[in-house]
Image (spheres, rainbow, N blue to C red):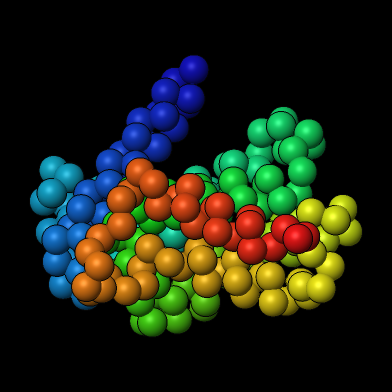
Length: 200
């Protein structure tokens, strides 16, 4: 029981540190955020902070993992077996857009070239990314096989379309048309994806 309570407290502290780091990154950017600032923001000593995350890189990997876990939690429920492959893909895309809109500035920072490069070199993140990619590829193939996606579309093209739309919240931020509605954008992108792929 004591061990379980200790673990819960440790997890709560990790979550608090991650939330504070997201706020600091949103305010200052990744490069300007320091571990000193983070320890001060959370109200912990530097040794306590370093016992959770030894480097800024560890923090970024943990933030990316949180985003990925939330993104793919949509596939973990029991309804996945009853939903069609295209339903799963559409829900996944909708959730991915919503996660990025909810964590607007942090999500933008995670796509910066230096952070993408850093994440590529991290084994845990690479493993997670490969698993995710395999799930999406399988859903695309299943949707084509089941006739939900027009068979004239090849899986590599569908995958690139999926990824391009997934990145859409971070594209065109200075557009003259203004900022998209965060409540309707996930559904708009998901509908665009679905209608464009369904057989005519």
